[in-house]
Amino acid sequence: MKLGIVGLPNVGKSTLFNAITQAGAECANYPFCTIEPNVGVVAVPDERLDKLAQMYNPEKVTPAVIEFYDIAGLVKGASKGEGLGNKFLSHIREVSAIVHVVRCFEDSNIVHVEGSIDPIRDIETINLELVFSDLEVLERRMDKTKKAARSGDKKAQEELNFMERLYSHLESGKPARTLAMSQEEEELIKQFFLLTSKPVLYACNISEDNLLSGNMENIYVKKVEEYAASENSEVVVISAKIEEEISVLEGEEKKEFLQSYGLDEPGLHKLIKASYRLLGLISFLTAGPKEVRAWTIKEGTKAPQAAGKIHSDIERGFIRAEVISFEDLIAAGSEVTAKEKGLIRLEGKEYIMKDGDVVVFRFNV
Ligand code: GDP
Image (cartoon, rainbow, N blue to C red; front, side, top):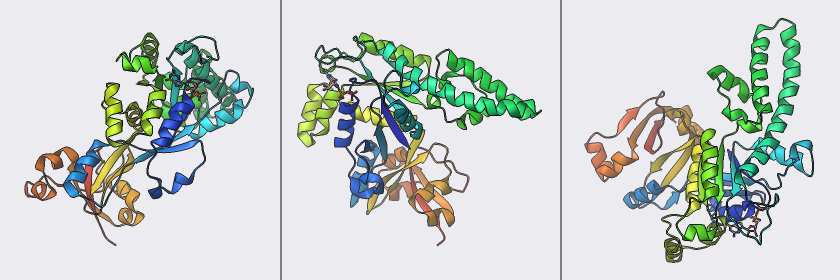
């Protein structure tokens, strides 16, 4: 489950990516940490872990992590194979969601590839390249489906009807994710692996002056917010340059720096949390004297499969889960009190995990 960072040249992608990699997760725990230079692994900020650590005094605290993939070089004409276009599109194909960095800062020293600051034009430039690529993919599929439909395959005909509707939607320049679909159609479109089906988060890169003046809502940001709202996408406002500076600071120094910009947490935290949600991910928690840890699952995961994240043996031998919500545990003050008050529930195989569940799995070995 990777997110790809995309955007036109000179909008601040590398700057943001640097901030991400510098703020990177302690790698030792993660086998995929040896990775290529354009992949960054970061801890998902989770205040609940700190609270649990205060309660359990564990030997270590392990956060959930997500991966960001720096997909530089997407330019106008990419879908026509101009430049290294196709390679970039294939990289986007590999990610589950997209962070689209949009330039909302003015700086006459930094050339804008299109000559002026216009975030909506920039967004549409990139989205159009993705739409073009999707149209091609869809055309190829439609050819096959047409043949099947002609030979009297009813299901193929239904699919073709949907494809035609999707095609004209894309042709009007709109991303696939904005098409209203039935549940069946949603299942069908997954098989097409379209680039514009992927969920998008727009990251507005604002200037340090904007940030300093507390004016996060410049006119460019407002436009992006309107645009994003029209397609049900989220927006995060950051200053990539400041995030890059924050990412190398620690402790008091970091606190002071954040305060001087009127921030209570790095903008990167907001971005990472929003990215986690964008991927449809939630965390359940385990807590004990050895380790306090957040585990990543897809929303809707049932207890045994969640247990499988810890170890396949626990999934195989699953008996039950002892569950308490993080809030209830904190309110009780300790696990012992929570037990005495009967706040710890026993849940079975069909239980759907919730974000922030603190869990002990019981299993047969
Ligand atoms: P990329 O081509 O999208 O990866 O863009 P870069 O991250 O390389 O940024 C392009 C230029 O813009 C660099 O000189 C950055 O220092 C500068 N830059 C990035 N973010 C900001 C920002 O928030 N404010 C200002 N003033 N400059 C920025």
